[in-house]
Amino acid sequence: MLKKPETLFVLGYMLLPLLALVSAIVGLTMILGGNKIVGIIVLVVVTQVFTFGAFFAVRARKAALLQESDS
Image 1 (tube, rainbow, N blue to C red):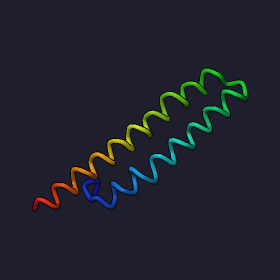
Image 2: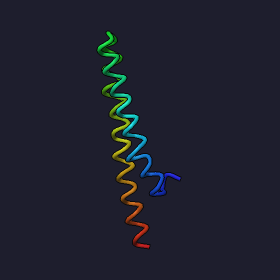
Image 3: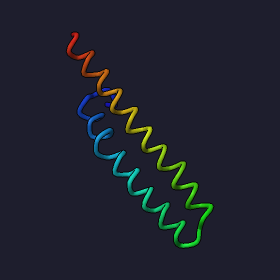
Image 4: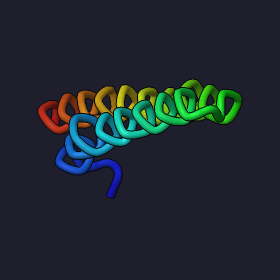
């Protein structure tokens, strides 16, 4: 399922970047609201996980498309 280019497209270009944006907004809201430590953790760790996941999905999609065109 995670080898299909269509699934990787949805993950890499839509779902994971949207989750990264939402987690960045939540982290900034927490920092401005007074929860500085938890907000920084959410902003740095959770946002980066979603961002790197999106990059991984885009790279995996590119590799799957190249492999599909070679066959």
